[in-house]
Image (tube, rainbow, N blue to C red; front, side, top):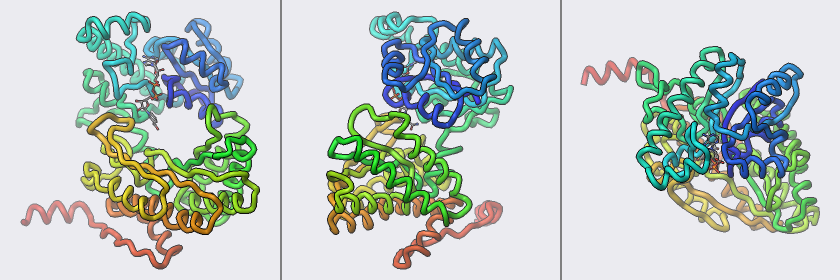
Length: 427
Ligand SMILES: NC(=O)c1ccc[n+]([C@@H]2O[C@H](COP(=O)([O-])OP(=O)(O)OC[C@H]3O[C@@H](n4cnc5c(N)ncnc54)[C@H](O)[C@@H]3O)[C@@H](O)[C@H]2O)c1
């Protein structure tokens, strides 16, 4: 498969690694040579290409040879998309992870200008710069549309690409006023992961010792493999992907700073993995305490109508109650610290995020905190998603009530939309 995208920055730089672990040919455009070369030096991208005439045949060859390889195109992504469209190349997957949540101040560089020219125009003629960004987005969408018409699956990566393209007047809307392409939360993350409680659980080995991280990877894989044996069919795919990921994480050298790992897991998985770490700290198999946490881009911690809660269709995605309730619950169920903040990823005023850290030291207290807090931190959001009648969440919370008899969550009553519509007419 061929995956084409943009951005080798702070977060977007993960894309080529993900491509390699998934076994595809990936091409990521990055306009800033320093960012691209840094990712290459760190081993996060395999090849650097500065010239489209040389890149295109390299892509064709890699796809034909069925190689797993990540290529960086050092240049503007619009030039790349337009060339792929002109060459009529088949692209399987497409996305974009430039910083379009911040389009006017260096998040997105318009086609036709060098990085330096962009910076200068941004400062000296911001109105002209805005028009260049809009024109660039219109061209980018036109090329993407051509490839999508030939079968490419394109998705928004949570960087406001669709939103900014629509504001720029790009051909990105359907006649009934919806976006032409799905957002990855509505199409993928929500229904396949968050609704079931799968989210970015993570931990840091405070010893700073790579051997400790290796041990945690092994323990996590063992726990997931055990859970996988009896996992219901609708989450077996997620379990397989996560087992594959955690086994590949070490060999793919993902660590660039702290000895830390991120691993998608559901409520059961997170608690069992954390308890296994706690046991290992107590027995000395791990040499020092571990700090547990998670990203805000998760099941319960964030209310964000344009991203994390965008697949909640009962109208409640615009409320900020879940993040607040969640962080308060975390605070007295055992978190070592909690945070509540605004703006993460999609911009100020658009989102409320909550987070936590939990230091575990092998003690019985730590085990209790893990059982009580991680349970709440995931199931709270599943309950909300279930009240919104999301099918996966209704199944997941029913399963949790079977596993945990002292838990009672009210279930929604499913009503045919016609009944509601007719009732409204009558009243
Ligand atoms: N989906 C997720 O889970 C997730 C996670 C984190 C961040 N994000 C979003 O992804 C976006 C990127 O995050 P980041 O931390 O990597 O930002 P970043 O600013 O560090 O990186 C973006 C990169 O895109 C490059 N770029 C900009 N315009 C370009 C163009 N036209 N052609 C080629 N390259 C171009 C920039 O030079 C930069 O290196 C943000 O909007 C962020 O909110 C999504």
